[in-house]
Image (cartoon, rainbow, N blue to C red):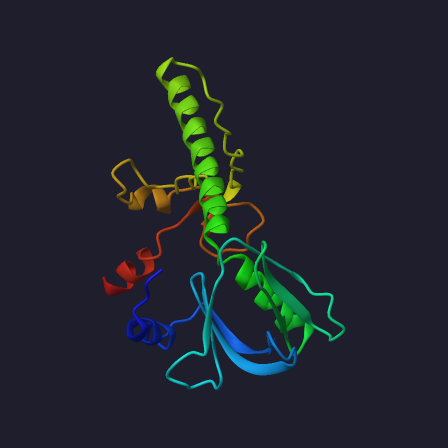
Length: 209
């Protein structure tokens, strides 16, 4: 596979990244762990000697491999194992960091993404099938039960008020009816005479004469 080294270095050092951080990488010859800075972009895992280096030391293509725990005696070790080829042994600083890296690398491969797309397509097909069944029932006139809203309680204070005495249908006041309307018994009213109201303006009229 031909790779343009300049473009690859630019790609490796240009954010955003899917995952990044320091890991300890076991050497292929001396078997000692060396601290490296790793950057994951898609299914390409770059590693640098230092964090802000302009060129990566190497590249691991995360395809056709398995991500699994390592049998190394050191803690928080995992490995990227290729069938019949080299196995990369890496170690993290904590259990949490190790699990995060293993998850990110597992989800980076094309095969995993293909499985995710297939599952999403299956769910979409189920939704489309259910939608077609509902449309078929509506087209054929099949009754679809719709839940009814709960009954509303009547407010007794919303009833219309009774009409006042002396108010006709045109909402005008009949003065004579109000003056001559019967009074309630038991009221000590000086204007009360034989159960009717006496006009209050008769005395004033008599004095003026």
